Image (cartoon, rainbow, N blue to C red; front, side, top):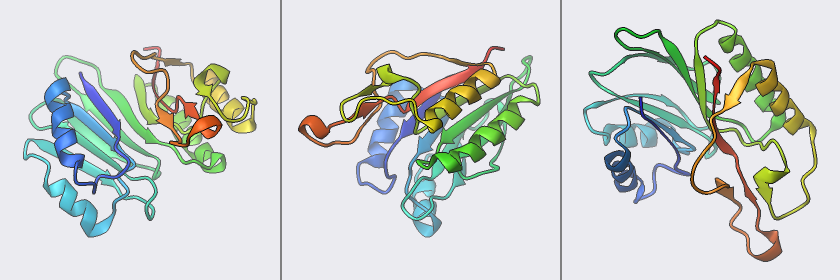
Length: 206
C-alpha cells in the first residue's frame, strides 16, 4: 500500500490543489494524509469538496490557524475504519482481503511537549491492542544531534528524552528515508537558519 503524507502548511493556498493533484499523479497513493491544513468550518468544507469523487475523506479541524489533518483514501480499495481520539492524530484501521488488519496513525504533533505527552499516551494504549501499527507524520521533535543543523547546539532536553522513551517502550522502528536529511527549516537567513528532521515514519516490528 502506498501512502502519501504531506505537511502542506495551509490548504487554502491557491497552489495547494494543483500541487496535491501533481503529487497524486506522480506517486499514485491509496491513502493521503495532509497535515497543517490550517482550516476549519466552512473553509475546510470548501477544500474537501474539491477533492475528486474517488476519494473518501475524514477531517480534524485546525485550532485557529494551528494544525489540522485531512485523511483521504481511495474508494473501492481496502476497508478503512477511521476516527480520532485527540486533535494530534487520525487513526485508520485498514483491512484488505486475505490480509490481517493493521493500524495507520497520521500524526501532527503539538509544538508543546506537554501536549505531546497526551499523544504518546494515546499511541501507547493503541499499540498495546496488538495490531501491527505504522505512525507517519510530523512529530515536532528530534531525537539526536544529527537531526539538527544550525541554531543553538543540540541539548538532550526532556521532550527529546520522552520521545525516545516512547519509541523504545513500544518497540517502534524508524523506517528511514531517502532524499533530503532535514524536513523542516525556519526560513531564517545566515546563522539564524535552523534545519531539523521533524517528519518520519515509524512502525511496530510486525
